[in-house]
Image (spheres, rainbow over the protein chains, first blue to last red):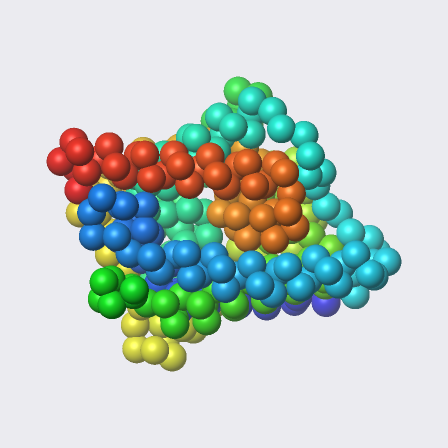
Length: 135
Length: 146
């Protein structure tokens, strides 16, 4: 129950941050990627702002044995580079540029602009399902 | 320098970014997990078999629109400019879904959580998806699609 609540609060702060920073606006995100158009640097500030608390959190993480509400850390490996990582990133970046959306803003926008956001989220889940079926 | 970009929102961007990072820090230090939205979305919908417990994934995914809704209420509305056609939403959505699963993450997992951890995988993935995004939008502009 406490873990459900922590995840709900974390997701809400995350979604609030996306909306407040302008990252739930597909045109603004696409504007960041549109270097030869009317370039919008906002996304760089968002990324920089987000990395500050997370960098501190990683320093804390190394000094504690377990998270405060769970038995252990469940973290992915960081070293192995492979073809899947590279091709996946190329495809994701292309979809991000075409739509101006990545998964977080797509889900957050369900509450702000439900119809087009639902089209994106449905297509995204279909893409995830397609990956599951083919791998 | 920012005067050259009157439409930019550096202050809101920085504050919103700090909120996103704080949320990811809460997931890491509270639950011991990466706040990677693509992975959590796949887990919440049972598309992924492994990863965070489903209840945690579902709670986080519900929180995203909830938080955005609260900001919309508090600020009198959030601007979302979607393209007029659904085609970019469908094509983009399919690529984002497939690509994030194949590449094990998106802007949150690789970009925010992995880069701040100096993960070699995440630094590589972020450099590639950023380059791919810039190239895609650049080609769209060249082709008159923007």
